[in-house]
Length: 89
Image 1 (cartoon, rainbow, N blue to C red):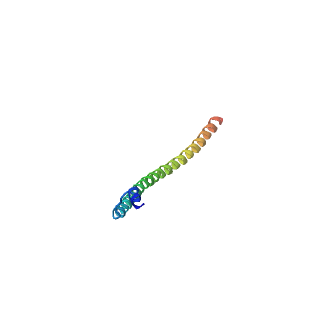
Image 2 (image 1 turned 90 degrees about the horizontal axis):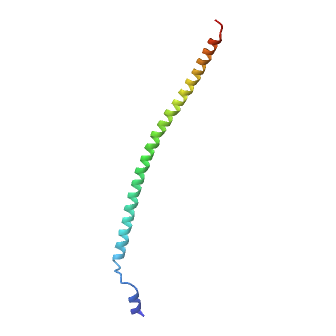
């Protein structure tokens, strides 16, 4: 029976298995660190993009308010002109 078991199981060097496992863990750790570093870079790019977009949004809000005030002023001017044209001379 032992001779059959020896033929069925491939011969493995016991000292190479732990070294291979250590190498695999090191490679996986290096890959995870590389991935985390690139993810941090992508996050920082997104944060800068959002910050610049927030600035643009604030500027648009200011412009909208200024346009609204200009429309109100124009309405008052038009009303005054209409009253002046309708007044008897």
